[in-house]
Length: 387
Ligand SMILES: *Cc1c(COP(=O)(O)O)cnc(C)c1O
Image (tube, rainbow, N blue to C red; front, side):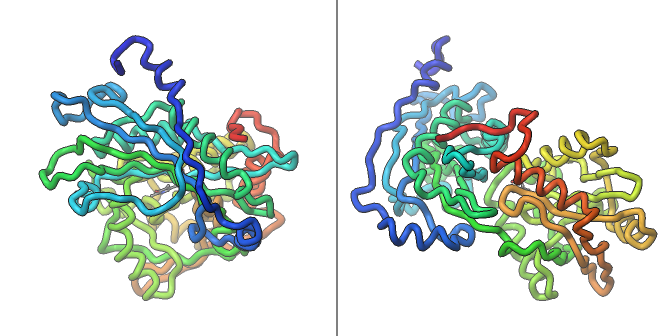
């Protein structure tokens, strides 16, 4: 069936069965939560689930053709709640899983939009290929977001800096302890109202340089949005905390300690000569949607934009000489956050303080937020209506 020439149409018309929550969270409680939702602490009433089963007789091999050798089925909207999985489900043992993260924003007229979801769908499939998971057609990914957000639209907050964070993920659900790509997989989307990630204030984050521990290696999974990369970053994050820092910076020891990224955010440098620089994608860096948007907005404003190697040494010297005027981190959750002090063993130095009247980081941040909340000029067609 899925190999038929009209397979795309089959995907487009995938029907979602609807199993509404019998006792959703009371409106009063929901309103209370939405006043100050924090990040990732509260969840909406529903989730979307779609299962995948490898066609019987198919070899458990990674296929280059989208979802060949298997079928997505049983798409459904159901109450948010605990999953029932075998303790032998592959995801618990071999970490075969991937995820995405994007936000839905309420516009002034009450409509709900998200930002470049096609980029997330494409990245999910790149991650899927790396983790030997099945690809999900983009139309199904988008429909899953629409089904969930339209059902739980009362959970989309409208306060300043607020949004509904959407977390699609895919896990190997098959009960099997042998090591091979699972024959049964689940794709789910859950949603969580979000306030300002770092508490609203744009206080510069302090950074600990991880010289011993890496989150990713060459040929590894660093470019995939894979939970294992996060697990690998946690010990370094503990080190950062022990040294009084907010976040950890990972380097590439193979390339002269080139700057890679933070545990979950990409890094940018603003130079006095109008250049905007971010580390190039080498396979150990996650290609952020925010990163690519910032690159485009930089180009739009006539900055000299480049993706290139930048080392901690260049960073230190650039700050000392005044050539580097701003350093910031970016990602969906926190949007753009200035980077302040960098602690590198015994050494430490501080990137210039943010001057709100001249800051490129704050300006791009404002531009991005305006766009996402429907107050900007969507010249690149980045907005996508969900409700
Ligand atoms: C998700 C993620 C980012 C940011 O990506 P966005 O698409 O901008 O949210 C950066 N680094 C890592 C390791 C990530 O997992």
